[in-house]
Length: 570
Image (cartoon, rainbow, N blue to C red; front, side):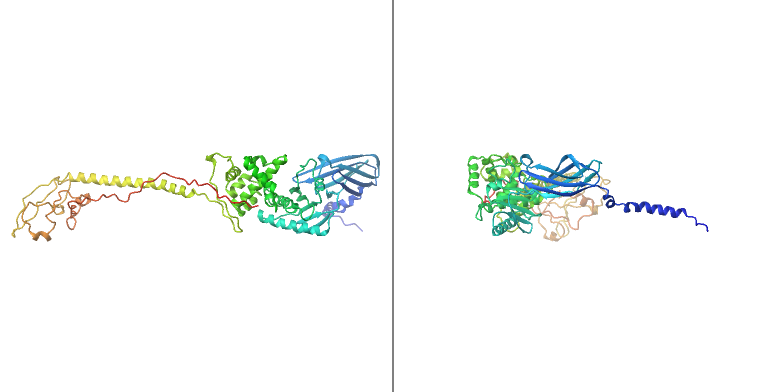
């Protein structure tokens, strides 16, 4: 029996199916068995603040392990960097335990709560490589056994105290968060962690080497955590340092996308939201006012002075300026300012101008003048000072520019006056032209007496003398019937009252009436025009002055720029 021939197309399909299914049959899981190196255990032990110990155990089924490399990454936003440490095994073996001691003291200090990621890479003598999956942990202050309580996005941590003390911390911190959220216009967006130490010594042990000794609390917005010390439930730090540091955390979450805020604004907000302000801070500010030694804002925009006294003044001055801003511009405008600070496209002065209508220099100058201190701007650079607003729960309205109506009026006059002048000139030219035409037409008429007055059959006058224009007929082709006959005053003769109803009165002589060219060339009016009677003796003709504009006085600008002084909120 003969075999069937195999069709080439079937062979091609079989080849294609094998080609695409081959990778699935030998997947990475299948190849994993070919990796002879495996990690059996790994650990990280923190000895805060001095070091972190990393330990890893691995085995190789094919060849001895000759080298291990550990990559350690400290994730401290906005910076994140990795350290590479290679360990060459003096005695290679198929089963090894490798240690790495990471020094975190001095310049290598990392704040408690810093996220850390690490991974191991191993190599054996046959050039096989194994990369272990990354591991993550947080650096903690391992000197103490911490207890925790949480509510919403807030977490508080404490030690060596009962649970009731932790509940007190949670309640006070939550009240501060609500107060801060109302002042800033919004609340926290991410979890917030608060670490509470039992003494100043314990607290300063958690700070980086070289920190200022006068620091009473510390916030790390990039890590969303803050550190304070609270001795007991009556400690002022619960109403001073706690709301201060929590303000930093909430504020930086709200402006995370924007540019860095000036230090004086950041710290001023934090002091403003404290429940308690020590008298010493108020006294230090008053002393600076007496000596006229306030710090310029540009000197405290990047950081505060290292000198304790000057730093204390910087805190006091920043607090007073923020209080002035809330009182003057209102809660709604301050919330708008913080919202605009989250836009990376504008700097702080532009945000100020959009929210409150002034940049930093004008704000500083205005505040200094309100305090009776020397200004920082020249008089021609000063803008009107807005009135202080009484802060209420309702939306505050921003100050308006009182010069706006003045400029609108002046602009209107600059438009109307030229128009009025042009109209007056046109009227004057038109009247002058009419007068010239009247005089020119009158020169073409000469009175020609045809006959003396005739007496009619009844003894009356037959009619007045007839006047014809002394011009060529070809120039004015007008028939006698179309001629306008002006009246004149007859010689002194007895008056015949029968004339009263027969045309124009002979008592008035008007050799040159008010001439209108169109009437001279057209049909005569239905009745001859009557000349208005002359004013009586002793009366004067009134001046036709029309409606004349009152003269304008000099332009004056409202220069009342003194703001009402209000007691700043504390």
